[in-house]
Amino acid sequence: MEAMILEKITHLKVDKNPLTKVTVPDPVPGKKEVLIKVSACGVCHTELDEIEGRTPPPRLPVILGHQVVGIVVDRGADARLFRTGDRVGVGWIYSSCGTCEFCGKGLDNLCPEFRATGRDADGGYATLMTVPEDFAYAIPGVFSDSEAAPLLCAGAIGYRSLRLTGLANGERLGLTGFGASAHLVLKMAQYQYPDTDIFVFARSEREQEFARELGAVWAGPTEAVAPEKLHAIIDTTPVWKPVVEAMKNLESGGRLVINAIRKEPIDKEYLLKLEYPSHLWMEKEIKSVANVARRDISEFLDLAARISIKPEFQEFPLKEANRALMELKERKIRGAKVLKVA
Picture (cartoon, rainbow, N blue to C red):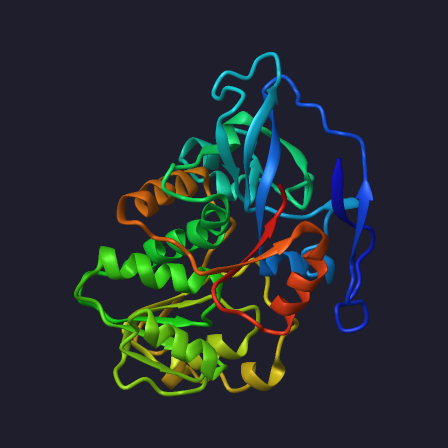
C-alpha cells in the first residue's frame, strides 16, 4: 500500500516535508479487527504535535492520521460488527483496555491503556489501515467522505468540550481559536442552545469574519474584552495566551474548557500576567479535555446527521499531506483540511 510516513521527530520551521511517501506491505487484520480501504483522512493540529515532539509517537516510523473514513474490505475471524463494503470511520481513540474503572464508566478516554490512532498505532495517511472493530463507527449516509472525516475528531472533541462546559440555554458562550473544531462547536451550540449568544476570539481577521458569517454575535482578537461576560469559554488553541486572556472574560462561576491535547512550551510572559482577582476569583474554573471517548464519536455522528452539521473543508491529495500540514502550521485555515486518499 501507499503511505505518508513520519520517520523522525523534526520541526516544521526547518523541515517543511516531514512525511515521506513510501510503499509498504498491506496490513493484515487481527481476529477482532477490520481492514479499511481509506478514502479520506482529516488533518489535525495533533499531527503537528506528533511531528514536533510535543506528543511523540512511541515508535518510528509511524503513519499519522486519526480522522479516517473508508470501506471495510476484510475482517478478522472473530469480527462481526461490520461486513465488507460497509463505510466506517475511525477517530483518535484506537483502543482501550475495556476492563478498568474508567472503561466501566464509559470514560475510556481516561483509560491507562488508551491507544491513539496515528500515534500508538498506524493511522489514515495511507491507502489501508486496520482497527479493532469496537473502535470503528458507521458513517451516516448524509455525509460525503470528506465531510465525515473532520467530524471524527474535530467534531467529536468539540462535542465533548461543549458538554463539559455545563452550559445552559441562554447563557453566553465564548470560543477562543476558530479552526476545524471551533467552527463545528458553533454550529452544534446554535442547535442545542438556540437562545445562547456566541462570542469568538481569533487572532486573524479572516477567522473573525468567518465566525460572523456562521452566526457569532461578536468576534474580535484573542486579547479583546468581550462586550459581555461569558458563562463558558472553550479554548481550542495550542498556546497559553488565550487561556489567560479568556479568564478575564468569564462571568463569576464561569468555566473555561481547554480543548487541546498539548500546549506549546509555557509562555512565561502570559503566566506572569495571571492575576488571582481578575482571572480566578469568584469561583471561576478551568477544566481540561482528555482525548475522546467512543460515546462522544457515536453520539456526535448521530447529532450531526440529525441536524445536518457539515464542516467547511479543503481537500488535498494524499501526496500533498506535507503542504496541508504546513498550511495548518502557518494558520492558513478556513474550516478543516482533508486528505483525499482514494
